[in-house]
Image (tube, rainbow, N blue to C red; front, side, top):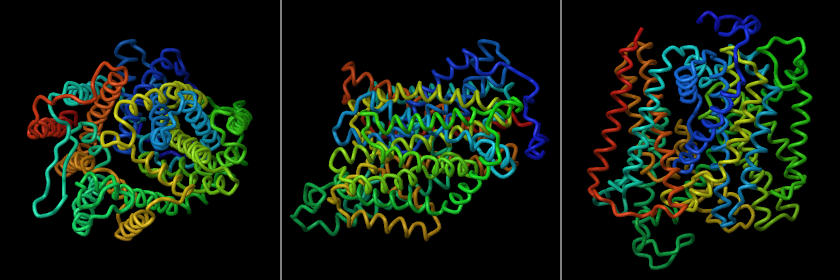
Length: 631
């Protein structure tokens, strides 16, 4: 198997050669894919609203798929499993596109309809798939040796090692049960607190705390110590530098300074965070996102040229091509894009008009080309989707304002364009990884592309309900549900349309992002930590420390990889389990079957800390057990 990857792109032989046909886009695979797409879409929506990040669903989906199809239904086709994981990532991408933008509609108290939400993410998802089709042969096949697509390659290895699927599946399900149980006991039955906090002596309003949630621990393990460390650096900068400093200089004032609604002398740490740090963080995230985008400009320009040459030199039809090289026909792709753009232009559901539709078409293909190539190098989690979405929103908001579309209507139109682009980029990045997986295992591209669209449809019909339930239960932008990316989009659009933002604070955040970038750190990661409460960054950092311990004390590379993969599967289960129980709790609150506030039985913070440390030790122990699988 290892020799396959050493061949040239033209002579590459996948795990299942093109001459061999196995069951692939079957009814069973489609049904299982739809279920997992909805489940992981809801889980990622919760996580995105909580921490502003989503995690890849491909590997857990592949493991679960193998456990069900092989273990229960005795199906032996690796290509069926590939279809299931492809559809599952559609749910993850739709969740990301929705929660990074659409919470702004709830914050404006507009109560968007299910039809509006579904239309936005559905059109964005279809565009993401359609626009990626002409790029597949160029990026996946011709650039096989140069673009590793890390998640896609890792998922292919998981699928090829399907004989260990039973043990891997048990890891995911074990993590799922642990994460779900902790969430149910903490936020469902109110057995213990899920947040701890303490002040720092001699520093007014200096506070450190932690949300003791397994999902955040899992996120930290997956992203690793470097990114987690930079994220908490931003949180500490806000909570033990900026907040105490504002408290010190404002201690003697009796006047209320905009945008807070009380004098600084009367505000606690959380009041200063919501009144001032929010805007500093928003400025930092916005500029850091644009910095990330500017850094990718050489790739952007190169991608446009390569894409144009690739399209001119490729035949997109299915005739005469091998099974493993057949895409959806180019004619169907062009007609599909035109149909979606025209529907967007003239539908009354979103009212973005021809200007908005043209902007979606132009920015869509431009940024899809960039996103599809970038995820091949750095992976989906590091793709500058936020930066590209912000750039789109900045442009279209100014255009709408110049053409007279202002006020609430202009803000909704600007956000809609940004949301469609954001969803298209998320879907394009994920299907790029999926097509890499398919290329390695021998999947049929057009079947994966169709499967992705089915997953997009299924997820789009559910994601609106998830957002409505979460807003009604916890409140978008609240302490329990910060919705950081959605709040950021709201701030940017409002500022451009009305010009009534605290620009001094936003420029302070922007300058902070520039300084961080010059220090050699990832300004976007630090800015996100600055924007979010430190209570979220702290457990992420602990997860990163567990990953560091695994790497530090695993001397041999094979053993280190085995332990990393084992921990990643368990961490993915923690995230999915807690996130889904969080969605269930929100639904119970929404339907009036449960109160959002309850009397905590064990109020001592040490109980919450002990539970979290227990899960942390369990993650470390499970990861280290991989030594028994060493070969």
